[in-house]
Length: 216
Ligand SMILES: N[C@@H](CCC(=O)N[C@@H](CS)C(=O)NCC(=O)O)C(=O)O
Image (cartoon, rainbow, N blue to C red; front, side, top):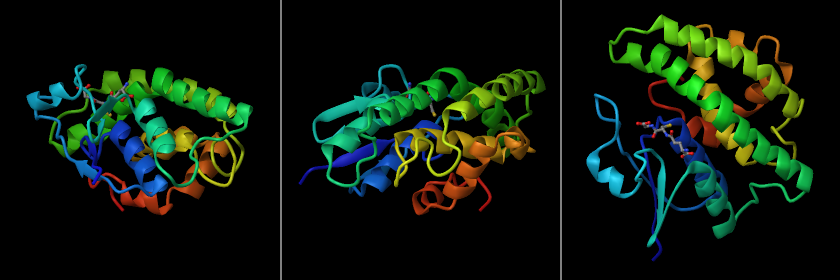
């Protein structure tokens, strides 16, 4: 019997994107926790799966794959279940654009500049570096209106009857943002993103994958 394993800490944003994709596709898989070590970084044995020392990694029998966008597209195409990428060229292009914008311009600042400093460091009893937070918050506040402009005004980020991979890339990052103190202020003037988040936050896969560190 075929085995599918997703490696990563459940609270990592990129791992959660792949996890959401697996749940929404309805595939049987196992989530193998790979904890970040207390000083940062990942256990040495993980490097044999990911030479750039990141998570997640997907193993499907003898096929080992890293990079979240590649993992999610593979899951969507390799298994039966609902199509998680639109067929229509413009919606597919928007989906790819949204994932690219998040990866290139927002993800690092939301994860490392805001969530790491304002959520995860305090949970470990460590001090927040306010200068890092301030720089990241400025980049995120400047970038979000441009992101707002490429998403749909209601429903899923690229429209359609089901969420797409764009939603699964965005959900973990917006959950991080909104769990920061006063996080909702980031969406104050962004009605498309506010509607989207309120519509999607209680979806079963989103609830099932919420980091245990977050309040219910
Ligand atoms: N380009 C990678 C980025 C993955 C990534 O940055 N993952 C973070 C966790 S969300 C990580 O592994 N961080 C550990 C580190 O940088 O030491 C992907 O798309 O999978």
